[in-house]
Image (cartoon, rainbow, N blue to C red; front, side, top):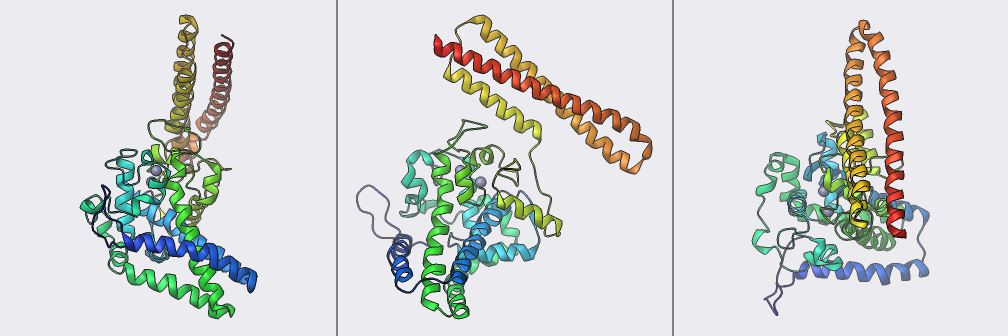
Length: 388
Ligand SMILES: [Zn+2]
Ligand SMILES: [Zn+2]
């Protein structure tokens, strides 16, 4: 959104009236006008489908385009996909991709630092959700794009940045009206696909800055406030695995397990089969497992400081042994993958490959057993602590 300001009153920076009015008016119309219209005239099934489709298009343009493509460069995308993301991003009304990415890179660089993180969660729910956009908190650095010089080389990013206001007006007004003519209900489309859709897109994205730093599990790190939350992932096209994202932000995935709800990842991966995306970056499995186990071990130590010298020593020994086994397993797995690649070109390696495959299977089983034993040991220590 662009900026317009009022003179400073009290100790706070001046209010940005354009942002405040857009948020307030769109919310009021969605909360009052949309239910009234629905009860009085009703919305057709086609209109509901148009609403859901538009939410998905604008939402995923932010998550797959603004966030994982431009802000983090986790993969490369064909120009046709970049144009779609640029249009969908304008429809989402969250400023240009250049500006959004600049803010977001600051967020990752200075996460939770109240002076430098633009939407620091340490300043509370309201501030990180929407408050940071309502006043001139960042007036001095608003047009500083030094941290997105790479994006300034992308002609599509710069085209969208230069024509952001025009593109936003065309998409947010033109699209609902076009839907309205197609379905024979212009007012219904303006209210549902125009206003309600925008409010839903806004607040679900804003949840990533607010709730995803407040509610959920710190699976991989507690060095920042980011949380993993499957329910938020459902509302945000997969961005709810935010603890993972903050520690491994170069990964194109946020939900890394097959059961994790991450449609943004599914889209990026599916597009790679069509040649529309390439160079998808993934974090090494060893790094992920190491961080997860280290966090489990740390949580145990934080919850129940172990007074008994022998128990503490045994736990540390077991932890070190598990880490060693983990590293050896991932090294063997890498060796297997390299040998597989060679074997494809040269049949001579087939015997070595079979042996290696068997070795990796055995190592994986041993690692799983070791992990289970270590967890059991941690539980026993916890129970002993709670009895004591
Ligand atoms: Zn991010
Ligand atoms: Zn964050």
